[in-house]
Length: 236
Length: 236
Image (cartoon, rainbow over all chains, first blue to last red; front, top):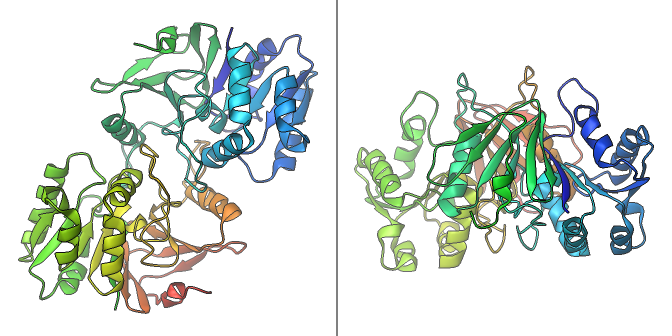
């Protein structure tokens, strides 16, 4: 049974790293002793792994970073659970693809290994990275991602600022452009919320509503606590 | 001699389409009768071409949109000047690459045909689209762009908002991540400014300063009117 936590942002303004998702992480990792961390979305893997290790040590979980492993595929095969951290989605997916770790994590997560993603780590859990907010600083061989859920997520979803005079596209305009090219649903996940996936069921958790974009329909708001399992059905 | 106008945004808040660059366009197109328009960054080519045609009609310039041409390469070969409009940079570059128009425009622009780019049309004029702000809704075969200038541009450059509580990366953080992977200089072109390239000389024009990002150095501001020709030297 799939067990996924797909988090919009690892850190809320004014709060500690992963602090707002502490209870959900504790519940997901209950009984686990270790966690495999993927720091590839940021450039400084050591600093990132140390920061993440400190956060999980408070749960009594030993974090092993994949960049310190001699054999990334073996580390994935042995992992009790995986956490893919945020940063640049293009850089992250490129490394996941080059190493074969993308397919290895996907196979294990589909078979029930708990998967935690934050920001870029949430983007790569979906069908593709086509709804990331990140700059394309690295070109991955393909935009196709792990496909742990059959829809797209836009993390850090941001409402338009009515006082803005900036002429760049709003987030909603960008997602409308996505639907000019594709039919896949996109869930805009605001900071403060996350998705808790358990097999065929999915719940919106946290403190903020999410905004669902379907091609050819008006966007729809879902309050925290909403059951979004319908999005897990592949042939909607 | 290269003659390029690389514009940050086609439209300033509260003003008409291309209104703020009217004088520069008039000067560049002096003596020309027609202009080839590339509308591929937006989905609705007809509406986009009609809007652009109206703007250039006021100069006495007849605009022909490439999407209405039977032979895009012949249209490019015959063009007196080219205008590549804004929208989604990934969609635009994909179409430019698939049709061969990218290479055809590049060859003509290097030989002196005036090139006007706005927003996405400015991104594709540079070495690559790796510093676009757009969402990767379409995957082009390569991020490599026309290479009319040997550096990167970030159009719609936006200063951080000190009052923001949003945790997504600032534009400056995104460009710093670019420099974790690459050494190419990046010019952040704020809305209201554009680059006027004449052969080996390049001037910053318009009403806003530009911010230059070099790997391993602090960002540097350049006031409107600055001579930025040094950025055209390939082996800096």
